[in-house]
Length: 275
Image (cartoon, rainbow, N blue to C red; front, side, top):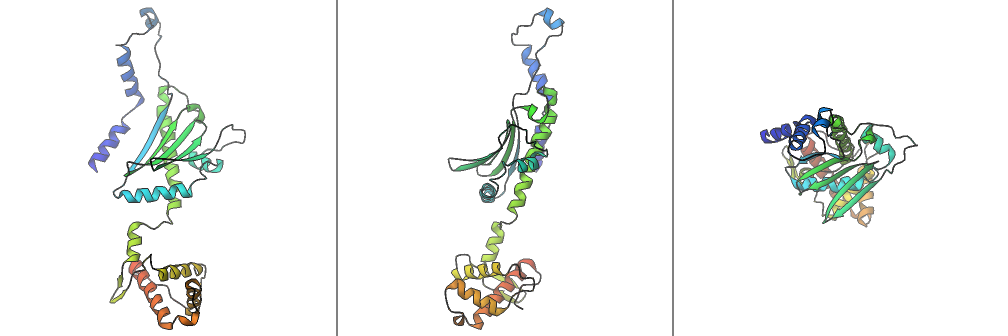
């Protein structure tokens, strides 16, 4: 933690003044066309910002989560190049008279996908860096896209715009990612569960019977008053390809008990059940 804070402090300390001081140091050593009279008259080199890149790198303690997250990001955020999404990311209105392309491009190279969002001469690139970190970087190739000049003193303004774009993109993607189960949750559902003195077997994802049970629950998700055991039997039979009479009451009771104890074991609260 101390190292990461120290590294962030070093990155934050890079300022326009430091960049200018480095340039002046080398200009004193390198030949240039200005004579002594020119310099006395006030002629000097000035620095302009041709390209600026601002990156946010989030290192993950469990790299597998990063790859799963990014695969879902690509699948669920392919429409980020539309003008209304660009407005959300950059927090500015895009007038109809703007002559620019708004697009999103997915590049897969060496099995490492990247997500690219374009706005005028600016690009946000996001990828899974070295299989351990989620890297989001905004590259501004023309500061006039944001009504900011090119001279070096404008660097703080561009820095604020670049990192705000990174944060906006991550906020949009985080909302999309909330529906995905984490690895820990997935493994907990697969394992047996204990709630008080009661135990129940896990809901193993590879079991066809579990697939039928979970699909049945999706059918009941909009029923505010719950469902009946007879409804569960009917849908289980339909998804399993058998006659409802072939599913005994004991089987229905067993499945409901598993669901109830799984929910109680995961949340510690009240469990679902038939009416």
